[in-house]
Image 1: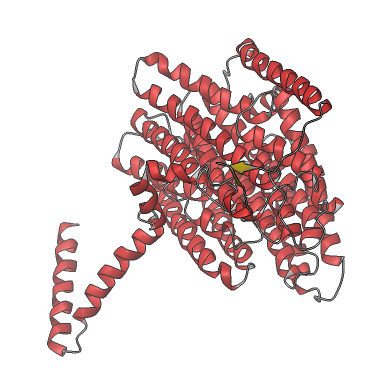
Image 2: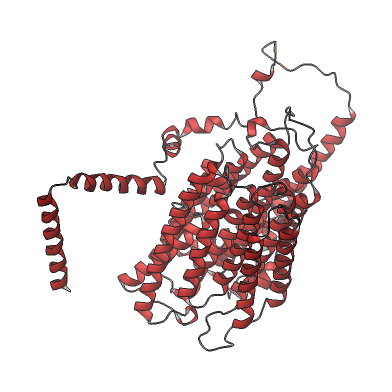
Length: 594
């Protein structure tokens, strides 16, 4: 077992190193090596699925259904991103670095999900922070600030991971995950739990550790956004959270309540920020944050159907969110912009990109029969089951989840109208569909959105039931009213289109108040949503000024104390001697107390 897993980690890392030293002028070699490597990993992940652990006593690596399930996701998204990058990265100067960093990320991600030893897991986890920084920094000078911010937030959370591991070792005397099950009875156990949760939430991008994702959205390459914040980091962050809640710690009502609160806040606050954005990639980045809330909320329900819903939503979100970012990359490739006010009417020029983006938009909005609906419904069902204890708080979690779904649909109506519908804009050059290599991954992911929706039992039976025992039967009859309304609406819409398209109408120039509408008077797809900022002006103003940004808050506190202590370094010898004596007194006091 360990021999097999070590090869899955070793070879992508070595081939990534080879890609790094290949001469830049060499064509197709790095692409071929990356494609073959990720293709092999994906094929092997399918065959590897279901192989259980315990082949060796106290193994450094182990495999169970959850880790094998995440490995399939890692290899699948790695393969699709490499295929997409063949065309997307063509002609770029940094292809050697790009492909090597992608393969190193896949290698470290594989090591993370199969690590049984916590020190080994922390090593792979920390290396992922480095590759994340390097991939973001490929965006050039404009990405430098975002890369630094990402490295500090994610790297800072890694220190909490190490602290949590140290506390677990003190509490249990073991560093093997399959031997740890901590009862939440002491302060040290609370500290260990919170430390590990911080590391998982920062990687997944939940609030308040989310601000690195919107920061890098406009400057990092779109393929990097599709690969890391949209898919891979979600899989790894929620994987660690699931391990924490299902394996490492026993259920504790108060701490699970804290997780529900974080999930609910993440859903609503992030989608409220998404709905006012005017950049396509930044809007998608806030939705990448918002969807984490459903995963955290599902796992924090503490009941089987809710936990399964959170894990299922982790997979579904990675699928449709990756598809959405790939669609944004295709739009940017052809129009050289992702500003919504500069886009419009692309649906007829890019039909495949539009169709895939539309399917993914319906999926993320929770519209049946797509996959996002079923995972959200499982989370709702978990919340309803939790509401049986009579607590009023369960109502708050349910309302937050429903508000998030409604506002998600509203914001994607905005982006669909602004980018693919509406009036066509004047673009530089002729707009046409992107190449086969760029559209193929989007088509594959859109098909998954449909298959994992209509055939939702496939992933639940294969991946979720072995992980979470006691999942209650999904009540499909509850879908009949909503599906009926959708089907009736589609039928009436289709009939209306046929009837009105066959009629002949006199065309007249648009006018308002008797005056012809000039381009300056036309309302873009983003104008309607500007009024939302007026509803909560202080909150949005504060968000723009980054008063909720944990990075800027921490930086301000450090600079404040740093300047205060700097003022004490006045060059006077007596001052330095006084501080030395004061420090010695503190150390003596602590030594005596210990």
